[in-house]
Image (cartoon, rainbow, N blue to C red; front, side, top):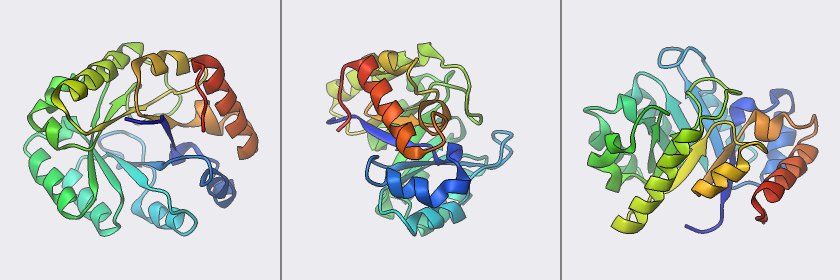
Length: 229
């Protein structure tokens, strides 16, 4: 589907350096990944639609929201009002809601994504897979940064690429969780279109975002033999 894209997880950035980090990353990444957690689906509570407004003040890049929330409908409505470019919902919470919410997102001129936990097979989304614009494969359990990488989840990325080619689907494939020097080679072999990078892969590598980016770029290029443009 073209070049590999990078989407920093802003939950893991240094909020004391919010403006500095966003302004630098604007020239280097393809989109921003924003986790919204409600303290119910997962125990943590993180970013909110207010945060999206703050990013928009200094960035024109697309924003992709990952909804880790019990009430999917409520938050989809909130994000549609904000014209958030990507709204990604957990498959495990979409029973009885998938077609309506996907249509609602598309009717607003936005893109709909679905997220799969490590234990969730891709077959769970087969009833509506042809409608989605993005499929995110969790390579860690949702809700916490810094967990160990679950290598078996990469098989789903491979299967989704093969299915896309066979059926002519148009979704992009994204991976989320522990994307860093230790896992880049294995992830690259599976072949996602979008890497979400967080604390271990980007923000935690150095105090300065410029140095962190150079380390991440070097790590990726050395481990995969590919170049970040």
